[in-house]
Every structure is written in C-alpha cells, then in structure tokens.
Image 1 (spheres, rainbow, N blue to C red):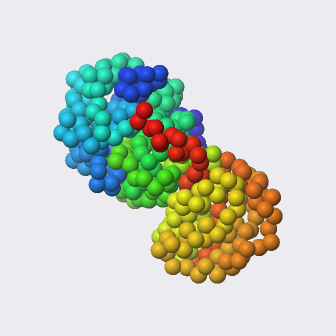
Image 2: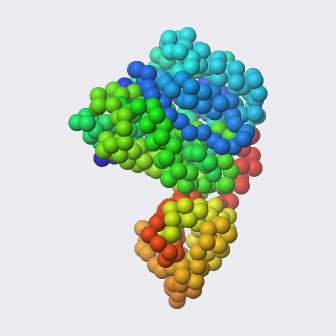
Image 3: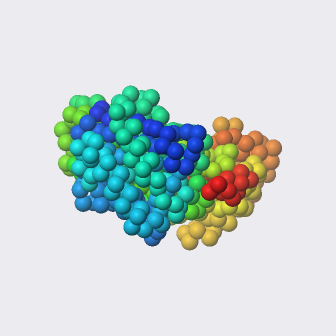
Length: 407
C-alpha cells in the first residue's frame, strides 16, 4: 500500500467541483460536489446525538434504504440542524435539483451541511450553486483539493489523503477529504468525512468495514467534548478499478480494510491536530492493557481532560493530571503500577515509574512538549492490549473562536 497525492478525485471515475454560493461566507468558496460516473455502493455512519440535522436524516435513508449513491452536495456555513420540516424539504430540493440537471435519482444524492445550527438554508443559493458546479465537475486532483477547501468552517487548512494498493491484480485507490475543527467528540465518526474508492465491494461488507473502522479512528478523537448534530462519514465505492467484487471476508477484504483504515486514521488525526485554536496534536497511547476497551476508555479520558489539554498548551509536564484523568475514566487499573512517558520529535523521556515521579529534567520535558505533535504513553502492566486516542491542546483562541462563532 502506498500513500499518493490526492483526495476524493484520486480514485477512478470520481469528479469534484466547488463554488462560492454566498451561503454565509462572502469571501470564499462554500459549496462542494462529488460525483461518480457510475452509481456507487454506499456506506455511512452518523451522529448518535439525539438532535440530528436534516441532512443526516436524509443520508441515513440513502445509506440504509437505497444503498446506492452517485453524487454528494455539501455546503459550509449553515448546518441545516434544528430546522424542522422546512430543513428536510431543502434536502429534498437539493437532491431534486441534481436529479433535474443530471438525471440521477434524487434518492441517490447525498447532502451534507456544516456550520451554524438553527438557521435555514438559502435554498435558492444552494440550487444555484448546484447548477454552477455541475458543468465544472472534473476528475483532476486540483478539483478535489478545491472541494476540500470549500467545505471548511473554522478549519485552518484542508484535509485530504489518498492511498493505492493492489487487490485481485488490479490497482485500487481509496481517497478522502474531511472537515472538522470544533464540536468534535464523535459518537460514530466525526463532523463531515467523504471517502471514495474505485474498489468493487458489496454494500453490506462496505458498511460493515466502515462501521468497524470508525471505532478505532474517528471515535478515538476529541477536540472539545461536544458531539455534533451533523456528524457524517460516507464511503462511495464505484467498482471501476475492475477487481473481482469483494463479497466475503477474505484477503482482499482485509487489504481493503487496511487501506480504509489508513485513510480514516489520517483524516481523524488531521482533525484532532487542527482543533480550534490548537497549537499541538496530543496523542495518548495506553499499552499493557487487559482489553482494548479498557485501553480505549483510559486514552480517551486523558485527551478529553481540559486540565491535561491546558498543560499541553503550557508545555507543562503535569503528569498528575494524566493519572487523575485515567483514574476517573471508569476503567479499573492499579495506579501504583503505571509507567508514563512523554515523546515527540525532540525526544522521549519517562516521567513516572510505578505511579511515582522520577527525577526527570523539567527543561527536557518542556522541550519535548513544545513540539507540534506530542505523545503520552501510559503502560498499565495488565496485559497486551493497547489503544491510541488523539486530541489537541486547549488554548485561549478556542474560547475566542467560539465566543463569537455566529457573527
């Protein structure tokens, strides 16, 4: 498997476009579209927040009832959440505009929105944007890149990745793009993520692969502890690579899952590292656990600790906050057996052994914690299971961004 340049247009048969529809932003693109030359098997995972945005409800019907999709329309700036029947009608109107212009059945058109909750979409601008984008759909990498830029809200940069591998003697590509910077504490996956592949794989297996993988990727990141109303991750597989269709769990299925995992994990880490106001990606790895579930609970408890996140921002090796966060996670372990290490590009050092602080250099610890990517490794010495979670530091700018987000 090889990582290559590109995103949602890297796989064969996919095209993208973007436009400035003036939905909320006045100085940038704010709509994107993804299109496949042929209908795709589609899989999706969605927020478990009881408050679900209209596009989430629309896309759930596409994934679980139609099971096929050929186009995706995405807007940034307004979330179309808490908008009642009017909001649902706008999802339908968007899909029907694509149907009218491209003869794609409306029930095979996915829609996605991100932005402010409670505002109604300017549907005239949305439909106008669809009409502008359709003639501009291109399969080049630049079009995919511009689409990744168009779906951002408070993100500081676009997020995209693509990989290639061989399945059944054919070159298969998996590519994706996502947006996410705030209101990120997934309970399925996170924010908006779109993955495209030319692999031939049955819809049930595609759905099973995605649902399993989000547990180790998107569900292992957190920026601020808030689960969005709009969380959506969809995977479209158009089969144009020409590999024998994957219909059972064999070596080809395992290879596809590995590629999907690499794409999802890379996108998830990009979101965690680009948390609103963040200056550092904070990775927490728990090793020596009795079970994977125990390791997951412990690692996520640490990355969601506001005190720990603030310490990372201050480059302060305040290990007591980490041990404390592990202690209230609900997972059972012996704190007097824990070893803790800090690691980054500046080096690695052990901070505590068997729950007690070592005579470490505060100067070196600060140097290690001053890098843009920092890892804490906790060995709880109970078994061989492990898990990794990703978050970011908590900065002054996070409050500034969210204090006036609607303005």
